[in-house]
Length: 330
Image 1 (cartoon, rainbow, N blue to C red):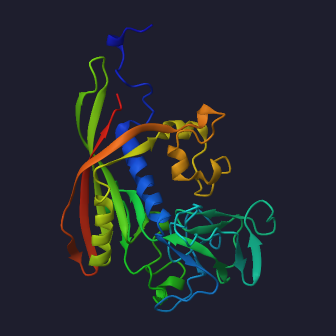
Image 2 (cartoon, helix red, strand yellow):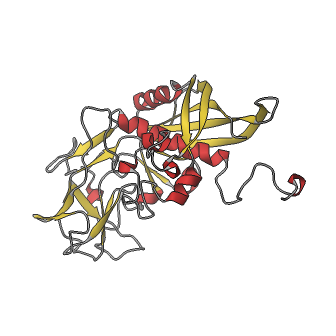
């Protein structure tokens, strides 16, 4: 047995996510699921014309240096819905296949003539082999209204895209140029909530026998194209004050391989049924196997405050929400 004065205290593995990263991942997924669960998505059927013109159901070819031209096709909005069983009366569309011209190709291994996979976060269909960039590719899907992302890298690496709902913009159909030329993974569509864990922490004792509570602050940057949207989302975040949520253990999920999406952004066949956020925080999704119990600890939310909305450019508004968290992590 190693004497405790010779090793790091309260650290099991230097590669494991610590509390700051656990908080970040949990609150991103908590709000992403929460908005979607209450109807924060739009469904696109075939045919569907945009409010200002353009065909919402048609995908555009993407010039991506990682693929051949004609392999990658994306919708006008990214962040497609993969979740099922939401509280909202209208359920999101579950992608069952894609049309190339008038020919339908279903998803999954049964499709051998034109195999492809769906990248849900980037809102893309990626074919195993390129098709003509002049093809008409059509899809029925649902996309999320609010993008919930980590704040790290947003101002410097990603480019904010305004007017992503304006399909009448002639550059949408242009290959390799226009407002949609920026790669989807480096483009932020609005409205967006960017989440940050503040590094400052405070500690206080849990009981005489040991243990500590850890206090950390979370900061939410809300960016939208209208003052109304920005204000509305700020309220919905701030209203989570004075409550508690259960966290899930990201380390245990990573080891188990049941995270809902894989490295290609497609549904993971090994995930828990539908991979929903509620199942990740349930006490025992699989009562016969404790290895599928990913609940971590309870997180208390308090001291929420919001700053006034500021217009930083025409049709670009930003506001912030900050609240404190308390977790018995030690």
